[in-house]
Length: 113
Length: 113
Image (cartoon, rainbow over all chains, first blue to last red; front, side, top):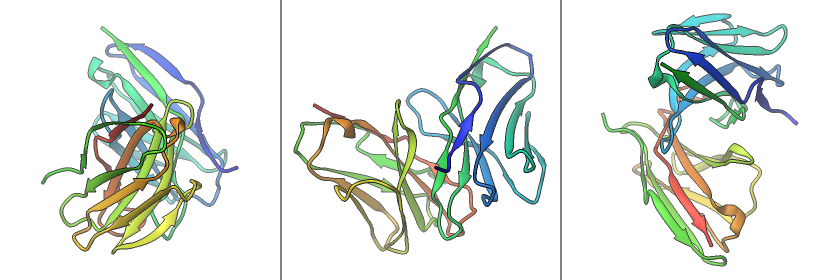
């Protein structure tokens, strides 16, 4: 079936390093993608989104790259901080008539100082 | 502006009971989506309401239902609870368009004994 997945369930980095979290999606018709961060005991927090007519979008310390040829999405976090430790999810929009997001299973990012 | 609020935050029920969860979207947001999050299945879309109408529905049994009120507040109901319904139930709101950013609430943690 259609799904959005992440390549690695866990990622451990040192404070100050750059982090890259990857995601593969399977629905070539999806045209909106979002990265969320979820800390323990909280709901997912929006990080950054990208539409399919773009291949790169930058935010504050974060960059999302979209490669439609291989259906790949990545989140880059610059100068990773301990506060970035969380579970990161990618999601794709499933239905143009609504807001039914399909989520990947998540990557747990651990940042050590 | 206040974020998405969900009540109650924690709930313990026994098998066979029913439960009602509430979600208040961000002021001005008219679309509310519900998701179930479990360690095994991850984040899964339940349904979406817009202007008091269910616009999308995920692949869940009929025991899961919802509604939306004229002030955009939404409730979801689970009848005849099963152990497998133990999960974090999240709601998210957007203004109206299908590609608007979804903002999540903190969730309601439901434990079925």
